[in-house]
Image 1: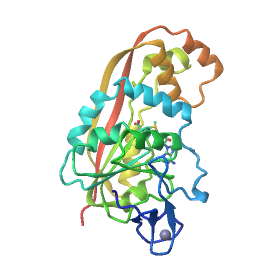
Image 2: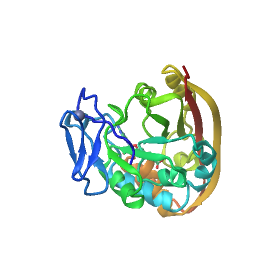
Image 3: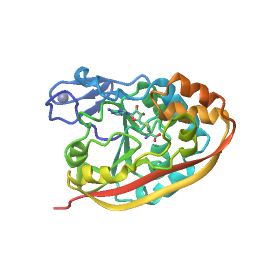
Length: 273
Ligand SMILES: C[S@@+](CC[C@H](N)C(=O)[O-])C[C@H]1O[C@@H](n2cnc3c(N)ncnc32)[C@H](O)[C@@H]1O
Ligand SMILES: [Zn+2]
């Protein structure tokens, strides 16, 4: 199991696994999980500007990934994650848990997925019980000790730069994916007034480099798939929180169509001493 850190405010202890839960040396205790995930969410951390994806969005993403739409992306990322020197990996905004086992399941890496959606970590824990799944707010405190993690991953998820820097070992890596400018462009052109989006990856490089994480590699990933109406509905549900009614109606009229999937992939390294 991944070595977790107590999330009680200002507590400086690691958590130890005992028969009926996780304990720290200050006497804090977290019950043994029912749904297979650890609930380390502190009351003051429940509120967030991004309160985690809704159940609908999580389930839409789950169906989308089950259709295999991320299989090529996984193949592209595998060389970045299959390094025997990665002892511990933490996945921020891990979602419904497709990427964790696909990228770390074949290695000795101790993996921890963190998400703020109960639905997401519940699905993830069911899918891969060997992973350590945690309900927590990644924008607050990451449940790992200082300089204890070899690889932090954020695939379309949260990127708390200072916390990533704190938990990474010197020389540790951080893998980030964000949607590319062309991602779902044909769909967005149909349902939104403006289809094209600003490129996001440069701003992320600036943000993470200001936290001493140096960009090692940037790679564009792009493919084209034919989406049927169910897949179109899922793509919209998992992507746009506030799709307006008028846009829903437009989307419902869409027939099968070829759509571009695109992502910007970045690999950072924390400064070595
Ligand atoms: C677009 S999904 C990506 C999920 C997964 N990485 C994937 O690619 O399938 C973003 C995820 O971030 C989670 N999330 C949002 N805010 C969060 C926070 N503050 N802390 C942890 N997870 C968060 C959401 O619940 C959601 O599962
Ligand atoms: Zn504690």
